[in-house]
Image (tube, rainbow, N blue to C red; front, side):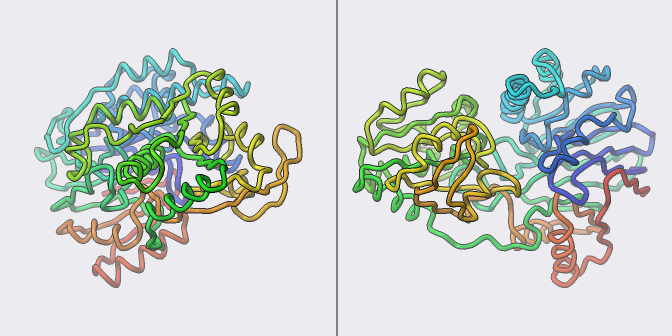
Length: 445
């Protein structure tokens, strides 16, 4: 390899993108994610690409979260006609994510990054690859490994064996290992250079009994004839919650006749993708052909069906997007139920600064919703440990398995998290050459 340029997720956790130049000047792009969060970051999405797409030999996609795939259609807009490589589940979920992104921009009358047609063209250029199978792109030798993060997520090993013996590994996002739902992280044996995520590089996930907390919340609304609202991200988190409710119903811990509404068209589509790949489930789920289905589960696809939930008698559970309560159908349910003391609101994911979810999480007594002031009388509970990201010990365990590492680039994390992991890697693993790159910084090898 000749050089690497860090185009995003360098000093932050969004906009993942890395441009790799080979010894023969061939270029491949790893991810092209959307910048999310504060307005300044979001504006970066509209900045011109810093490279000529006609010089790209290919694109490698680690997984289908928007902060990794969300700007891919910009390549097509700029005239890229090459191939994008991803696992089959990643291809399917990426199409769902990008179409949803384009649709939301249109509905909110914001300037769209791209159109539905550009998304469809982009997805037609995705070629699927299997885990653990070497393939060649020009002089590049590439292999995808299971990252254990979300369905289809991959770490990627890249080399140019005919030109240079060096191997570079991109971790992608590594999973909270092990998960109940999908297969655990696949460890990598050897590499010279590692580009590694650090989302929770300075943190240790709390130890919680997720099933016990969820059972308690459900049992309370069963007794009080209340409503349990669960704002959940469409990819992975919703499926984790469905599987947990499935387990509780199967074991008789909650009532079989308790209605559960999955009120998110995107989450419904993603769940159908999960059902296609039981071979990628955790081994203890292999005999369960559908861990996402149970008595009295209703999937509400249309707006009319969603509105009909209000007419359904209590008790009931409503799972709806968005996970940070920043938009989506969960807002209508908050409007209808948040002012009732018999409502339980279960937060199951990170709530970013500036979101309605963070406001409620921090104890707001009233919120503004649809230009109305709404009292928060619901009981708010949070599950802290449901994460699809590895924490510090898990990140260290992953890196420890890679032999002969000479250089580590720490990305996809705030500087505080990156610095904490850097010191831990030095003290625990004895690796000294650790770099915290900045956005648009180029390193020559």
